Image 1 (cartoon, rainbow, N blue to C red):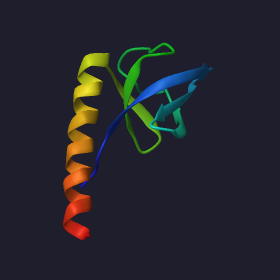
Image 2 (spheres, helix red, strand yellow):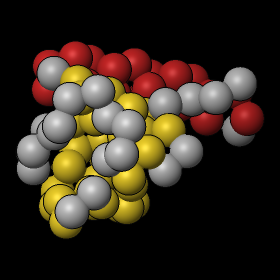
Image 3 (cartoon, rainbow, N blue to C red):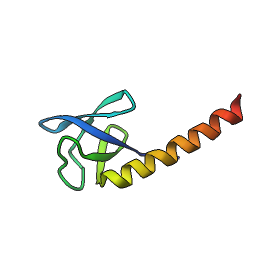
Image 4 (spheres, rainbow, N blue to C red):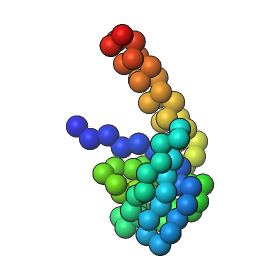
Amino acid sequence: MCLAVPMEIKKISGNIALVEYEGAKKEVRLDIVDQQPAVGDYVIIHAGFALHRIDEEEAKKSLRYWEEILAKTDETFE
């Protein structure tokens, strides 16, 4: 199973973007993203590529779901 996570673009240099979520930073390629993003936009990241630009409200909603899932997972393994 593959998971894709929304992350915020902090910097763009050519076809490379620096993205971040809660302090985790990663450089990703913008070669195949569906709409050219700008700094401050959220994109869905998978395997080192930005796949899809996503509305900020939808990104934050998705991230809240991730946080809920991870919180329940932590409880399960304690």
